[in-house]
Amino acid sequence: MCGDETLPRRELCAKHLRIIDSTGEEFAARREALQRAWNPEKRLFECEYTSIELLDTDPHNPFNISFDHCIPGKKNDLKLTFRALNQIKSSFSWDEFVKIVLELDAHFDGKPFDRDVVEYLYWRPAGKAPPAEPARAGRAGPVRAKKAKPCVVCGLPTRTLYYCDRCRRLVQRTNDRLVKRKALQESWDRIRQRFICYWTGIELEEVDWKSPHFVSFDHLTPGVKEPQVACANWVNRMKTMLTEDGFRIFVRELARFLRGEGPFRKKKLRFEDWYMR
Image (cartoon, rainbow, N blue to C red; front, side):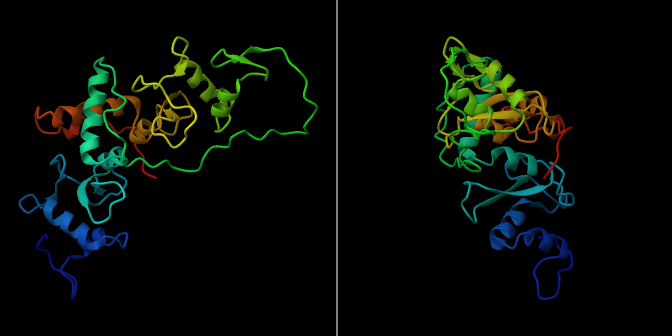
């Protein structure tokens, strides 16, 4: 690959063997991806999607090398890219990802987002289904009729203290309930009577937790409790460890590159609040 001295009885130097064998899986596919991406003149790796120069010494850096599954979940079909791009592409094939990025970019310019721009063929929900009814502390008392009053989120009639059944299920299934209640209040469209995604303007799914459009709560700044916004689950997973401005800039720069309007400008991206788990 690089021409450096190899380890005994191996075809690779110690550095590149460590990169390939870091997980013990897909060894041959990793080696092929590294060989394709190696630039012998610059003696470094280049992203197979954007052709930018990659790092290979700091796994916590957003520009460090990362192996992307071209089809999510499909083994031995890898491309070498950088960690940040692999992270936001994670739930899409490359073809789906290109369509999503271009559609988001057009929406940032004011165009309505096409909910069905892709089929979300490779979407897989994370975690388990939220409880159907949150557990309540204390002893159960006799049921007494109460006067109906408006839900503090959507305004629909409720006989509980604050929420209708739907909004209580969405708010109380997670931590930071007051912050999430505010996010739901801000996303509620009283004309359409639906929650609206902060990032795309589409109507959110309120029942089917496996849907990519299910209500999710995005921390606009990673790791900071508030503010949070209600958005589609797939957008939340895509944005993940980017700030609000960082996500917009990333999408804009990717869209410009995908339209063929010049090389990908690595220096345009912002990762001030980036961190890798």
